[in-house]
Length: 122
Image (cartoon, rainbow, N blue to C red):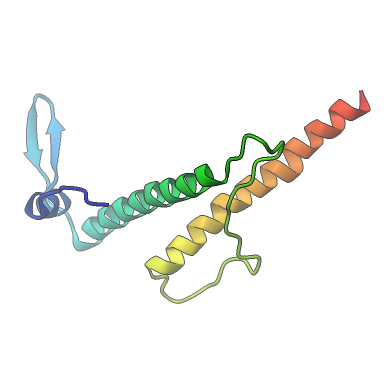
């Protein structure tokens, strides 16, 4: 994935972002921590979009109109979250994926299954 972003402009926006004050734009200085937080936020958003794109593309290949049930891919680390002094990008990706899958699992197992029971009991 190539984003076609000018590196200098990206740097300037992280280090000295422009904010609108009244009718004019003002350059705001950032601390190192603030700039790092902005970079981390962009990295998480890009990873989410890329991961979702890859999963969607893989799942498109699994659709078979002749089958009554649709197959899909997913990733689950049943050991749960690992705790480190420092979580690198790889661990962030694993944790993010786990959280999304846990939400899906909970919804499927507790909400959809309950709705199915309600339909069968009535």
